[in-house]
Image 1: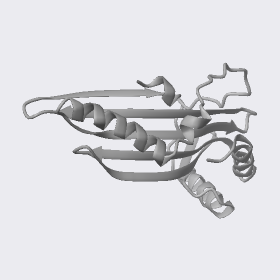
Image 2: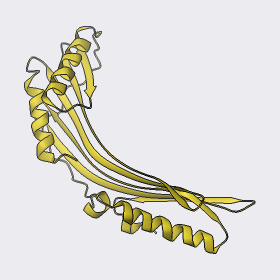
Image 3: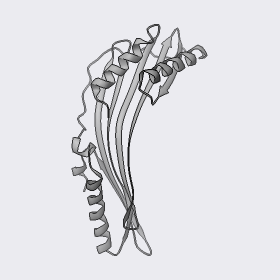
Image 4: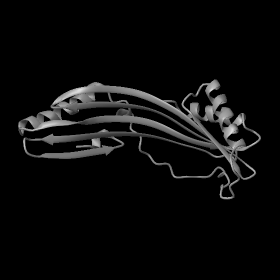
Length: 195
């Protein structure tokens, strides 16, 4: 996951290439991981990272938008070109709102490093505990245990800069007998808050 400073530099890079427009950049960078289990056995463990940049250009009542997952200089150049091309063929729209200037906002604290960086072994331990509870009650378990971290940032040519980093974990389980089943799910920014 990219840091707030890295996202700030990428936003400035994109905005510097579109000085003839009012421009807005939304950038997201995150990591996610997932452990899946079925019939009391872990069946899948995956991890991944995803970055994205969305660019919106406004001028004279017209708007063009483009998005990319390639945050290299070349990828940002290509996104800028695509947004300009979309702008050139867009219809005028008198409902386009002006960009918001820099402002104060209340920060929401919902990031937990341990939850974001939870290991496959830690997710497996939680799955084993849940499966053992089901086995003791003659039930078969299936479900998903996931965790992630993400930073989202917004910047525009009117001076706005805002960012937020969050984490999340969830545990979903189905417990099945021969004639019935039950399901539950818990999620929180901090996995230790999930029973």
